[in-house]
Image (cartoon, rainbow, N blue to C red; front, side, top):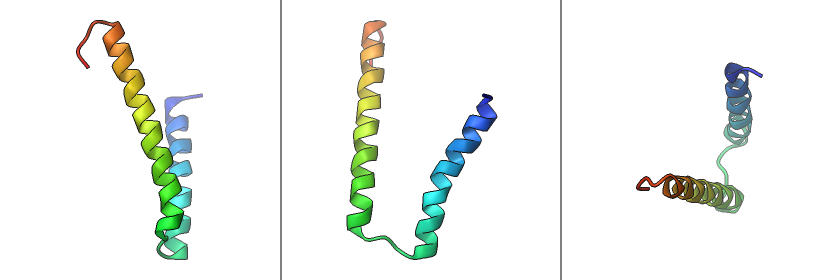
Length: 61
């Protein structure tokens, strides 16, 4: 699968929920909180992994 196709699928995956949110009106905090918590945990895991890789390579994180 090409990088362009992967990028297109990713954009579509992000655009669809945003479009639905825009069509349905504003979202309440109860709807946004679980998504924000998931994104926060995912980013924290990613940064932790990147830091571990940099440390293993002997580079400053």
